[in-house]
Length: 286
Image (cartoon, rainbow, N blue to C red):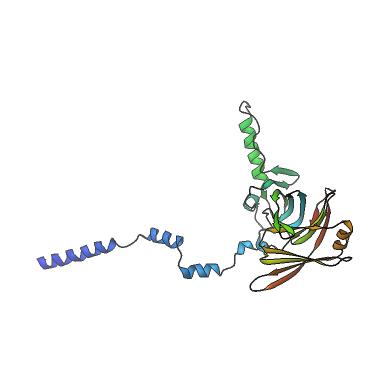
């Protein structure tokens, strides 16, 4: 082989090695693409609906529900019970279905097959001097793990209580509902307490826009409240008059208008009564 051929081959190999210096490894390029999608990909993703947000596609079916609110000065004590059935062919881990626990949540309980567990309670089963402390803790973990597995066709009841501060919303107040497995049903909960009467308005779970409420009584003029911007998970507390006004409202209607930049949506909310002096919750079956 001539010297000219050796020089030519050497220059070719050097050029190839130099080109490799400017090539990003495949793994790094893939990670970079995942972290920073192109504007076209971002626009395509934004146009896709969020499937997980639809309660109709959840693996658990809401069989029965109960919702309660008690006004405690500037605070609202809320309690939500949801009876859920596994309609799938697979065992469902309830732990994967529970929403994230916010700081304002007081208790989260699971009831199934005559057993109950409070998930936020302290798990201590004995002091440091208790020889059975570790064994008792292991047994508690086994009970929780077993209770959280819901076989096909069986039911479980999730109970969540929370305390939230009321925020002004015109002549009413607004309050954030606790996160639940299934969104709380849209409703007008009429509550009678010894110290006050009020209506709790729960808009539809996907409500967006500016909200206006009209309460139509059978024995007095209609009243309207401008509630301002609303979003999913927000409820409103409306003060009402004496017991006579409350009775007229129970036989009347609660109408909610949601106005956005693109559309206006009207809905008539079902009215559920609850007497604050009774322990029974207002129940609603979807």
